[in-house]
Length: 123
Image (cartoon, rainbow, N blue to C red; front, side, top):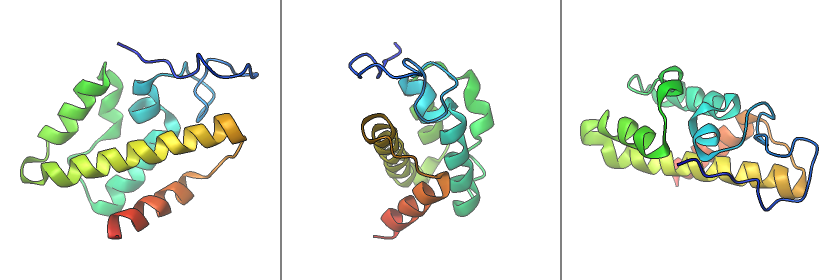
């Protein structure tokens, strides 16, 4: 089931579109792993942490957040807990970024979000 996040927002020019990329309809699946903005973040994380098991380009075929979550967690065997924590952190940072754009009209570069993720993972 797609969860739309735009229904309670005040009207805006791109109403119904993803606030991160402004190209596709907004949904949880799009925001977490299909959006070009979030994919860029995931690719930076993949490179930074040398996570060869994570391949964001293959996620376009995944139909639900549950299927995505299962695929990234099960692919990591003994590192399940670490990858689950990382996925939750990335999802949280993307959600905060989305809300900053929607409610405060604040845009942030992916590199800034990546730096926040790096700081959080070292705390």
